[in-house]
Image (cartoon, rainbow, N blue to C red; front, side):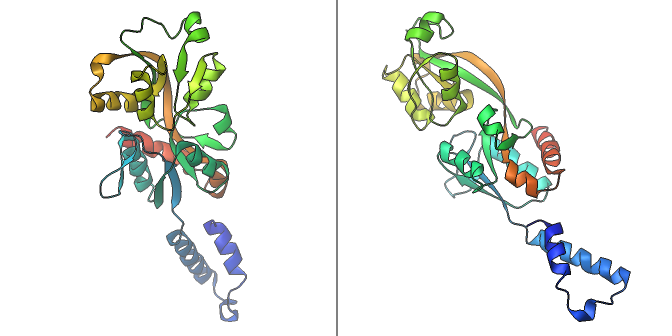
Length: 252
C-alpha cells in the first residue's frame, strides 16, 4: 500500500476531535501519517539463484556475490528495505510474473520478460560464451555445427531460448551450470553456452582449465527485472533513482 493510499484511507477515519484542526496542524498530521506509512513499508522482495560468483549464500546464510553487492548497495542508498530469496531460476522469474515477488536478478533482456517486468540499468558487464573440449575442432558459429552439434544451456536461462531461436540442436537443459560443465567433460554434448562469470569460476574450481576452450557468443547487459505490478505501486521516479544508485555503486 502506498503512502498516498494509506493517507487517503486514514483521513476519512479521523476522530471528530480532529475535524476542526488548523491547516498547519493538518499538514503536521499528514506528515506524521506519511512517515508512519513509510516506516511500515514492506521490503522489496528480490529473487535470485545460486550462481557463484554472482549470487550465493555464505556459510552464515547471508547473501553475497558480485551482483548481490551492487543491488544491496543501490537499495541502501535509496534507504529501502529488501529481502533476497534464492530459488531455482525458472521459479524466481515465475514468482515475479505472478506477483509473488517484486524483482529478479541477475538477468539479460528478453521479449518474454519484457511482457511483465522492466529491466534496470546494467549492474555488471556480461559475456555469454561457448565452451568446448580443446580436442573438438568444431566451430559453434558454422552451419554444420548448427545442424549436427549437440548443445546445452541451463534451464530457465535466456540461453536455452537463444539456442532454439538460432537453429541449434538443444539436447539438454540441466538446472545449473555445474551440471553443464560435467556434461561437456563427459562428452554428452559438443558445446555448452554459459555465463562466463559462472562457468569460468567453475572451470577453475574443478581444475579443468587445460581440457576446455571458450569462444565469445554475445556481450549483453546484466540487470534487475522489476515486475510491472511492483513498479505501478511505486513512485514514478523509483526506477530512475535505482538506476542512478546502481551507476554510483558500480563506480566505487
